[in-house]
Image (cartoon, rainbow, N blue to C red; front, side, top):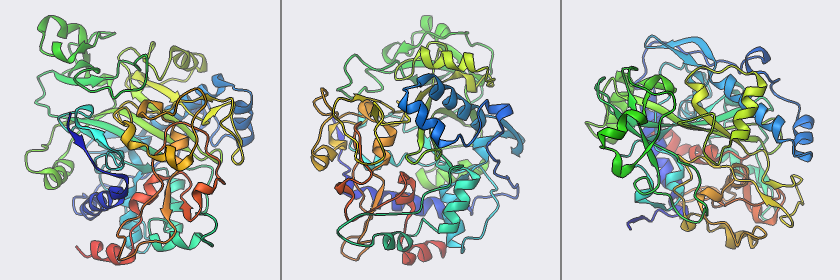
Length: 487
């Protein structure tokens, strides 16, 4: 089984290359249309007050009120997927589609923090997780179709610009002493960061398109579920004429079995998606090679990580496409779907096809921000199948760093055993900064689910980035930022 032996220490170098190429192309391929980033909608649309007072969310956590947590996560989804009057290429954009990408923010910071109008969709890139991890090649889609953007809400974007936090020279001074840790200022409570995850597919407007869909967690989450051996498939009709109400996904081996295809067919309108325009196609061809993309291809939203700064450690919720959203596969549940029904939140047909998994804490019972424990706790898994399911033991060396294991779990070592909050707590940069000897911005490694005290000594000599891996990925030294902007 072939392995991609990308190691943690090379993560920042890989991301540097990716984001350098991405940022210098984002403005080159822009057009004249201006997209105004939209604020998160009101309670009338979402069913929740935003930002929700942190004391209320902490009360939910203290009482293990998973009903309120789930309803709140659905309210976040309703706000992100609400329609706006902003358009691109004649298509109306959803709220999250109007938000500024981190690559776009980087260009603004390179231009002294001046706001540059958003003139196209945020350009797609390969998930940074795939550079921070050791991945089984068979665990990711063999057609290399998984792409993401990372976007900040208007308030989060304004904070990032004001603090110029994509500059490593502005980050390392937060480490005051090698005997302790440092931390950047925290984002405002109204901040939201997202990672929409797409499958890029060829489209001739007629033929069915095979799409891998998550079947649910295996009985024991101690393996890597490969696309060919574990995932199921549905077929997307781009003409919206042949879909069934509840598809029956098929195995990879049955992908071409005509007798089963009709029952596994859905319509394109069952997905949040967009048609690739000339701007996106030209960019992808420049970066990935001619023939990669063409105008009219499709990008289907398969999942999205979402975090909100409503509490100190952020709330975390992830969404992924489900063939039968009323009975979603694990790690979501029918319980979570039932809260959507009870909340009376109205979603569009496409948005209603996604399952939710909240992870507002690392373990049950919830632990304090500092000086909590892993003793007598129960794991809270929070992962997205389209991003973390392909991670195996080689991705998580942190067990030796932390020198602790989850009780009764023999040490979690797989992507299906992760938690958004636990892993993002490790988002850091080296307090020593960028040097000629060490041309990377090493951070602490990814970890699986466990409680992490934010004053743990493991953070000594590191600058904590308020749970934002995206800052580490974008933080370049001035010399490289300048060279990049002159290209």
